[in-house]
Each structure stands twice: as structure tokens, then as C-alpha cells.
Image (cartoon, rainbow, N blue to C red; front, side, top):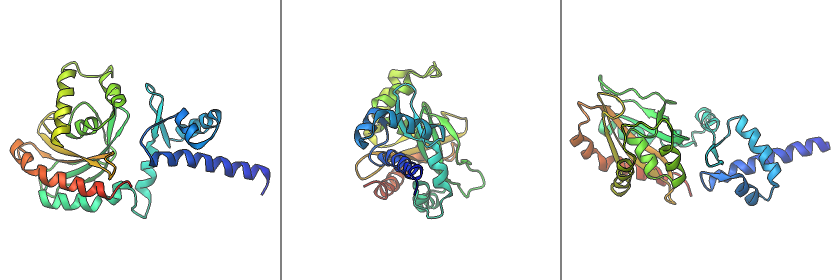
Length: 249
């Protein structure tokens, strides 16, 4: 192998070492990544710039911290092995759909939005259709509130300081609601984001207690009344618990 070939292989190995850091935690600063890998900061900066340009990592413009980019999810969605979370958790989602009869969705946070990475549609004639890949704001909806309730302070600040934050939502009251959600272990929304729709959501935490995703059951508000949603909470939380045991270390 030529020297150029060896250099290329080393560069690939270093880039993969950076990506593998996200197995340990969700976000890293460039300095932390350099210290963790033993690479020079200038090398890490160049590699992160390339990975960001290709969509494999995303940089938060406010905190300057990096996280996994959406290109990873796109690759995972096309793999045949079914080892990615969206495929791995599908049987449990189908089981929950069959039990409750409503649409079941899986959401993760991407910056100031949530993205639906998996969905199992209800079989009922009147149902809530949930397209995979849909992006929604983090300040409204049961899954959004779950993703924020189990987020760190930096993430909360990113969302609360968003210039597009609706003036109709009081921030202090919203923070109080998030505290209640974390205490109860679930969130509900009734015609918050769109008329005629309701949802109940619970966090999927891995074995170390790290938030991995939000599990949501949604449907028409005429069928998914507050009382019905409350009765569904034990089943949803149990499904989320089982899913969490399948993820992480």
C-alpha cells in the first residue's frame, strides 16, 4: 500500500473513531472529542467539518456541540439487518398498536424539532396518519414535551430562546408542565397542534437512564379523549420500558 493509501485509511479510522464516541453519549464538544480520541484539535476540526457537510454529524450553532446527523438515520432505515432502533423497536410498536388500536409513532430530537423515525398506522377507518420523516416543533405536542422533559439544560435553553417561540405559550408555565411530566412519566396533548387530534407519549430510556426517543400513541380526539388516554398510560409506559431494555448498554 502506498503512503497515500495508508494516510487515507488512517483518516477513515479517525473519522469512525469520532462517530463511535456517540455510542457513549449524545453530544460532544470539539475539545472533548479531541481529548477523548487523542487527536489534535485541528485534525478533529477538519474531520468534523467533512462529517457535518456530508450530514453524518450536526453542530448546534448556539452551544457549538456536535450530535449524530440525520444521514445516520437514513442509512439505518435502508439497512437489511434491522438492528437500528427504528427497525428494532417495530415489533413492540406493532404490538402496542394491536393492543390499543391507534397509530403508534417513534420520535427523536433534531435541533429545535422532533422527527418521526418510525410509525405503525392504525387499522381503523378513521385514523391519524403519521408519515415517517415528518418534522414538528418541540414546543407543542405530547412527544415534544417528553423529549424536552428529559433533555439537558442546554437543549431547553435552545428551544426556549428560539425567536419563533409562540407568544401564546408562557415559558414559566411550560417549564412547570415539563416538571410535572417528568414526575408522572408521560405527557398528553389534546388538540394542541391540530384540531381533532390527540396523543399520549412516554420516554424510552435505555438501561443507563439516557433518553433515546419518545413513544407516542395518537388518534382522533373524539376517540382519544382525556379519560381514554389516561387509561392507555400503563400500557404505553410498559411498552416504552421494554423498548428501553432493548437499547443501550
